[in-house]
Length: 354
Image (cartoon, rainbow, N blue to C red):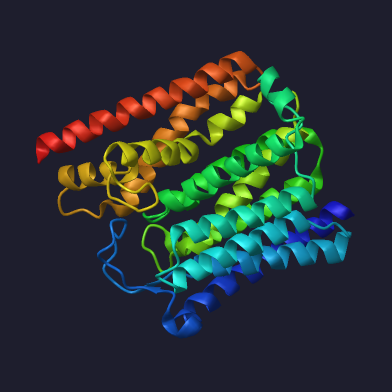
């Protein structure tokens, strides 16, 4: 009986979310007097030439809130940690989208405060990691807070960093959530599975309007939101599946994590501010190369497909040894080396062409 009700609820939710996205697109020019229309065609990560609303995050958060309240009404199950983290990160992002002078340092401060509040109010914890010494360190309240905060910040900022091409972030998070759904089928936690399905559903709806041609963008509000949700999904999946290596979840996040980590030190080495955007991220280099090779073709969405296809190939072998902590650990560090080699080779190729 409950399964039939959940299916009916999910079907109604998907239909309502679809029309909600249509409504948001329709009224986007009127939201905040059009301040969410992206008309900055000169920024390093701009690859569009027409006014496009950055209201994808608004449609996502409203759809997600709709699911949370519907599920709580029918099944008396709440997802308050998801609700309040999503709202907090969305608000930081929407302020950034509206106010051009919202300094990166202030964003980081507000974001960190929200994350730390959620961690402590809802007692978020990593119940087990594959490093014994790290398990011991995480018994310390202060170190646990710092570790979780850094995990959130890396993934949230990684999501924001790669969001620049049609479908790149949306498809990437869709792949991660789909894998999490499959491995959580064995955990017998239907409420968490429904939460993952709700996110997969709205990601698919978003991609209908963002890929291959974009009728709306996520904006900072949407990328922060997806980064926060992905972080929570990984934490709970790790805790619900103690038999799975925690390094497998690191493998799933390696691209989001290492894009931020590597970019930070690359910019320091080049005497640039690590907080300011540039046009030398991996996904931009692949775009420039595709554009050179496929002159005259729309390489925007092709670049998103290429990046996510390579990502899927690289992480797929780890599914064969998902329970082996040693192999997962080695595979994670191997992926970081592969990233570096690929990046440096791309950079060299582009310099040769220039």
